[in-house]
Length: 425
Image (cartoon, rainbow, N blue to C red; front, side):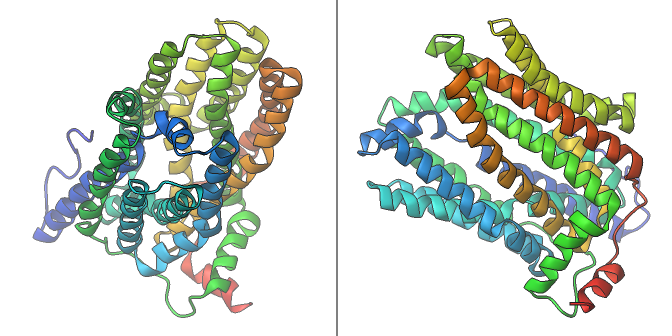
């Protein structure tokens, strides 16, 4: 949870005081929205719930693929709408759709009704993704305290991880009533985000003006991944590390199965991993301050790839030590790399650019995940982990060195540059 919010101990005017109060209120509300998305009571019993309603394992993967596809399709357009329409409006819509999706799940009984629920939830998540981080940064920037972003983002990520750690055993406990009962509780949790989003205060910021159309989205995407070296380097490295952490999240349970761990240990180890990530995220700003930005980029690249390699080469319960080390590095990587991107981009396109990053991660995982899954079935979990580690070591170190060479906090985009690019379309 947020704890003491330390910014502006003295105010020179009533305006500064009002901005401080608005920023502080936004941060509290963003915590509520974050927790409503991470306190997933239904996650540990989802497959059992599907099976109780006549679905097979293949149906589970189809539904989750549709959910991911729904997010991917709207990831960048929703971020763009957050820049043009307002982050608050985007968060309101996403929160309402999240509530509606779980409310429908309470009554759904077939594959097709579940499919509709997943589409609604995916669309809702796409409108929250990017706009939440953008609103946090804008709120701090309006109060002339954007330097505090890394600390606050780390705390929010840690709160999400803590919520995820609590949700697994709590969801199983509630499911003892019935497998559908957790969905009723999940609906209540999801609803908490709606009043929080409605009471957000949109910070004063520069907004896109003039020509605002889908063509401008393409301009931003092109400028992000092609024309701007510093931003391209930050997006490339952040996306690679994001793909690596997402892939490992799907490797955890196959790895436990390979080690023949009792099922009870799943409910102990998974929460501990999330708690570790949360604790480290909360202190990521201290790690970066202590060892420096360039060093932390190399540390992240080596730590992420090293986790894969050491788990694969060990091939025993000792590999759990390296799994925990991986999750510790993950706790540093997420807030640090997100802050790296935020320092480069201006407020009027921040949500769109962050959505580009999320889009790249999802597409990369969609390609890499099935390949590693095939490798797991063909040669075993250790072999797949080693191949993944070699891939992330080569690409991650290269991207980190490239980022160190070209990225600069002063190398920022401007609305003038953006409009000049857009006029050429």
